[in-house]
Image (cartoon, rainbow, N blue to C red):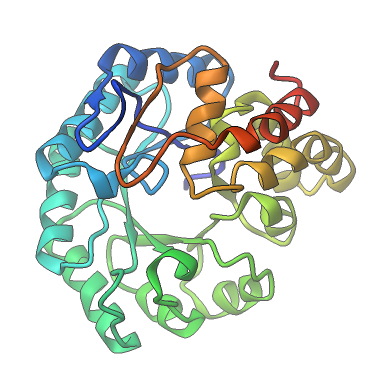
Length: 295
């Protein structure tokens, strides 16, 4: 079971804002060591925060493979392999398995707005094609597609589908998913702002943007929340509340990449159509970083 603070790792680049900013392999190694040292519980490579939508399939696979190599089994690695094409999702998932990933994270197909039956058949096809643990990912704010708890429960019984990253922020869904899904189905939050309460209500962890910037505090908050220690979880989460909000003042991963750059861990680099964080938000994000104690 995947649990605790699971970082949705940024993909470091150099060359500023460009359609083809160069991937920075040295910085990737630096970031991974930073997370290992600060007790991040698992790493998602090539998720939304990793700018998966702007990389070629070849680059996508290479980033997952290199992440697995650098981590070297010290923590689990989850490869982001979702796509709005079922054949592409199968191809990426197969690539992640061959690279040695411990599991895959598959977002609901975006843009084409499938039905609930279409979602079921899509994920079932990927699970049947590639024998690797697979975590569903529901983020309707990005995909214009909401996978309902009933569909999630149905998919929980498909072999190789082991959990859900639920990023709606709707805490009422936790009970509906847990009560109707297969026993032991992994419940992970995909929303930093509500993650503490998600875990206190029975979730096992969070796939986190904030963890890129404050990994140690996120690890501790998750540890206490998962164990049911509300007071200690609230204590740590209070210092992170500003980051939970300010890392989304512009589209993710724009603010978080600027924050990690501010920590000195990466160069300035992002791929169009994303841009570097607007100057008007620098003070707000930096203030949140100071409150979290990372600068």
